[in-house]
Image (cartoon, rainbow, N blue to C red):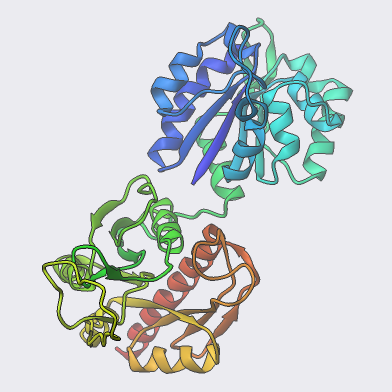
Length: 408
């Protein structure tokens, strides 16, 4: 999950460096944007070294640099890929600009261009904080849905005492978690997630595969890490970067994925099978390229291992989640799969629906649970779908534990 951290021009700017580290410990990817005033207190190099990301300081190419289209619209690109905009410290000046819609630098322009969640942590002189103009701006921002982390009281750099000191890291991180609906309810759990397609080789040049991008499985893995789980990600071939904090195992074929899952499953408490595993593979994999001929060719196929069914057959106390990508009769097929595979939850969708299916950043799914609950979800980002899946996993685990205690 990506956080864009805006750092503005106040003495507390140096504390933002510590905040980067703290957010990284929670497996967030952090990109920093600095205002001109912030650079008077701390250098961009510090944040680049800490975050491992490009630090943005100007709306356009820096003075003397070559202007180009990429620099001119970079605020749009950053706005589209961030999950949350955090500004800490947020000066009275930046609060006023956000409230009044002034866009005269990268950070203010990004604020207007982004639809991401916003958390603001003000820091300033006590009289500036208490001024009617600042309080009016703060209330205006709150009314628009921005989350404000009120400053602490204490001795300020200006020599005065009162409210205005940047809130502590714990309070700021807690506000970020609250805004993103993150709870650490999977601590102590080991979650295995499969993701992406498999490739079943026909010859050294050709193979059978599908359109899966891996985005849904990767979103689930990332969401589980944020909720405190140890996560093992078994991934078919994708172009995606590993979510921070996961143990990733790369595989190619269904057989390789089965071996990886079998090797790790003993210590897993939750297994989520989001991979689009090929149902069939060529019965014979040729060592040399099959040459084109004039006559038709018949391709013999054989079933691949059913990884979900194999694990669920002897699942013990594990909670098992499967996925069903359908093109018709979604509910009927999902319920059949839930029973046939001995799963606890099936995440089903119609891959022909708008905004759903492979290689989209959004999805439209219905969750079918073993206890009879059907939960249809509207179109939403795959990150949000992942969060809702894990909400249901936590609910089911609680229900199962309660049932086990009642049976004793």
